[in-house]
Image (cartoon, rainbow, N blue to C red; front, top):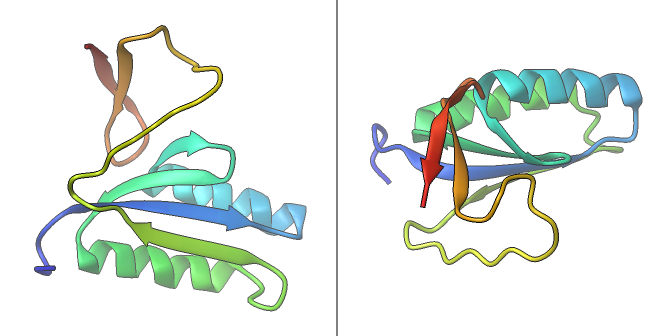
Length: 106
């Protein structure tokens, strides 16, 4: 992957301490989009995801907490089951900071 090529990453976490949980959640809301509880999506370059990794490493207890970062394939096939927060065919678009950028009717 080229250093300046943006890719989509999933960041998942399981924290044992509520204080660390809150700090990690608040931080991730500034750099990624919440997808589900404890799961965020980030559109980042290799350098950008390294900055996120470094910041998360400062917040967690590696003996007690679990943080995982997955690089999603470019041709991702997504299957969703269960309830959806938005009506069928409507997608919420967000920027890197998690701010709503618009709605897409598909």
